[in-house]
Image (cartoon, rainbow, N blue to C red; front, side, top):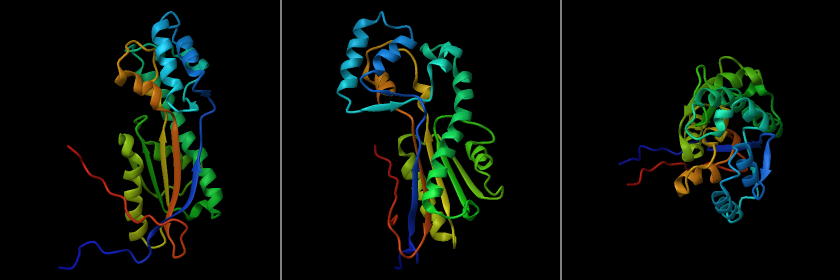
Length: 238
């Protein structure tokens, strides 16, 4: 029986990559002092000492944050675990996520070297915020993209977001002649920021491991590629 999956005549190819970071950053060794200071938790010496040891062994050198001391002073509930702060966090993120995506996008477009009007598709993925219209709409306005660009907005994918958007972008690029797909993955983990109130690992891992990340790819089919996207799959494990 002939396979239902047929290989594309011209495989999807990564044409350019761009990255961006927020201005606010701290070396991991200094982060415990900052966290316990802004959350007014310096009296919790035992927790702080333990958190310092974990930070030192995390192999993370530098972390970028979507919050600053100024924004935390303006929204003090963000510093307090379980304090009502969802609206404040959302208000910060729905503005900062598209802005950070724009910064990475411009770097990738410059590397690509083609006019921005050549982009045919936009895929924006984030778990940081939910907005209507979405972050894809905001990015179109920020970049001045064609209002009729084909766009996909993907929310709440979590740690497998990159694989998800690559799978979608690969299908789009290989099944639309001349497609040039702008992929934006942007995560600003302000939702996890708070004081430390328990010594359980699951509680700490959110505050220790998850940082602000943003990656951008330009994908399209060309016959002389630098990097081919041959396969991207998803599998649920029990």
